[in-house]
Image (cartoon, rainbow, N blue to C red; front, side):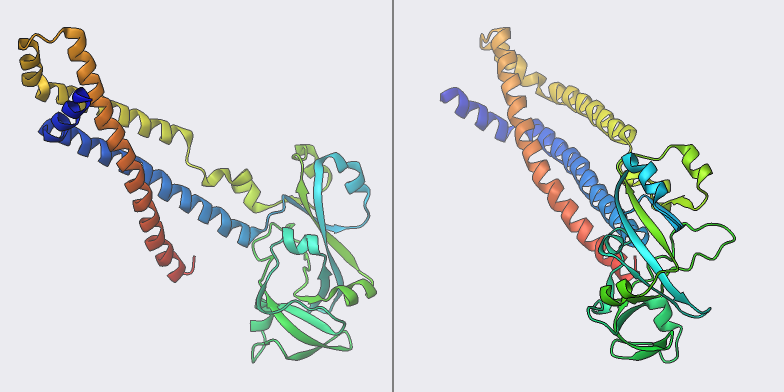
Length: 313
């Protein structure tokens, strides 16, 4: 008990111990804060990418039969269908099942999704192309029938990968499930979420099958993960700094060690005492650094998150 009290008192009063504590804590704050902030922004980037591109892996444009899905069933997890029922050069009318709404991240910006016969939702781009812009509650004529707009959805396909030199015709006017089931589809597009990646030759055999751009630029969000090499480099630099700081600390502690030796303390006891003192300093500094690092990370993320939202990211 007395030895413990002496250790605590000696550590608190030691200027070199306070310096070691401060430097170790600040290094920990920097390391933890950097990981916390970068991790938050990686998640933010991945979420924004999913909002823009959807979460599907591939899209098969104008699928004429289900032979492809049956042949490559082992590669396919979930699939969603987008049907095109009518187009006249100005309006593309169609429907999307629930799986397609989820995989394509087709969501409401204003109003609500159509639920009963005679209701539709239109994309934001289609809405703003009219003068005045269409809003929920307005009615439009499509294919000889009058529909009421209940909601505005995002312009979901603006960044999807599309076949070259071919009009893909994705619906900008979405029917409710009831009307979508009643109307005969001219053709459909299939969003595919893979259990495992298609072989490369499949894309050559089926030109209408295209990979999601988001998956091409960063499969499984790998583009948003901090490279292992950077983490390793940070850890190595931190280790070298700790070695240098430890050496500097021992230099400052040399006069005290000499005094201990003169009082008759054995070399093994002196080493054990110094070791306990170092462990106490490091434990306190690492604990304080972990807490402060996470606090700094939360504050920095909140501040920069607001700035990004203001700029429209």
